[in-house]
Image (cartoon, rainbow, N blue to C red):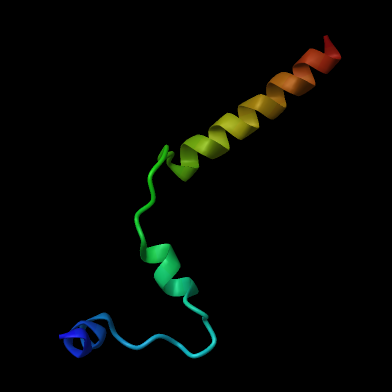
Length: 54
């Protein structure tokens, strides 16, 4: 039964040390789109620069 499960997941590359499997797992927590995160970061930088100028 475990052999069948290993075959369906596919072999892991020798040098990855399980990193590929780590990123496939679903994690709990806040999920934010990368675009929204970039907009928030850029807006924080702009607000900081404007606060320093004025």
